[in-house]
Every structure is written in C-alpha cells, then in structure tokens.
Image (tube, rainbow, N blue to C red; front, side, top):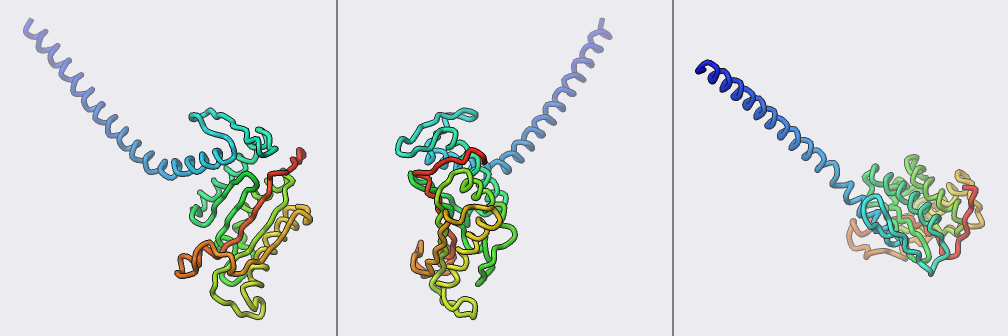
Length: 240
C-alpha cells in the first residue's frame, strides 16, 4: 500500500511540474508576441484613425470594425457607390504615404466642393528643379485614377518659399513654381492621358504661404504643390 501511495505521489508530482513548466513557457511566448504586435500596430492605429477622419469628411461614418453607416451629404450629387470608390482610392494613396513614411509631407483635405492633395516639394522635386522624381509616379498615378473616374476639373498650384532664386532657367520663384505645376499637369496629360481641357496649372511663387517664412521649418512647409479636384458637380466615367 505504501508503495502504491508513493508511486501515485511521484506520478502526480511529475505531472504538476510538467504543467507548470509548460504554462511558464506559454506565458513567456504570449508576452513576446504581445510586445511585437504592440510595436507593429502603433502606426497602423494612427493610419486607421486618419482613414476614419477621411470617411467622416466624405460622409461615411465607421460604426464598428467590419461595418459602416453611410451618411449621404445632400449638398453633393455623389452617390454612395461613388463615394466608396473615391474612399478606396484615397486609402491606396494613404497606404503608399504610410509605406514611404511620408505622413509629414503629404496631406489630403476634403470639403463639400473639393479634394485637395498637398505634396511637399521634397517629395516631388530635387532642390531648384522642376523635374519630377521617379518615385512619385505611384502616388500621382492613384490621384489620376480619381481624376479619370470622376470627370472633375483639376487645378495644380506650385508654391515656393520667399528665398529668391536666380538661375538661367528660373529667374524668379514665379518661373520655378509655374514650371513645377506644369510638370505635374504634363504627367497627368502625357502619361495618364487625361483631357488637358480639364487641367489648370498655376504658379503662385511665394505669395500664398501656409505659414510665415520666418524659419527653415516654415519655409519647408510653404514649398509645395497642391492638386485640387472640384467634385461638387462632377460626373462619373463608368468605363474606368
């Protein structure tokens, strides 16, 4: 009998030690994975919050993950389906901006009348140049998707800071800002085959700053290209 009790005790003790070790290992693994996920999801949460603000501006309010409640803005003729197409394309652009870590140099503003893309010059051009960098075609290509599907007029503005430029190619900031706006328009017309009658290129020089040109940080904010799509009275091209 004593031998039997000793045997049962040993078996029970062994099982308990094994379960305890296994539990400790699983706890450590769980902690490790939670730590990894916390690092990887911080920026994703910010991205989803940004997309939520976009949806709210476009008239689509998120109720909970996986569902949505559509609020039709009666001041615009855009249908629910058209809004979703617009939002899907905007989300592609936001994802590209996120992947490029360019959240501080690209912004999207939506109003009842227009969608405005603000791109810092460092994303599009080298210093003192009006030639588009090769890496921006993907973002501009997705903006072109919206322009082509929704037959809206497009205004492209070039802006500089107040530091003077005097080169044979660009005698002043007027020429530089105009050339940069024209480069973006030419991309839309020549590469994306958008009707040029819908496009307007404007050089604003340093005369419409976002902030005062008192510091280098402020001047950096003022050097930009703005692409405005007027969609209050747009029509939809269903072939796109």
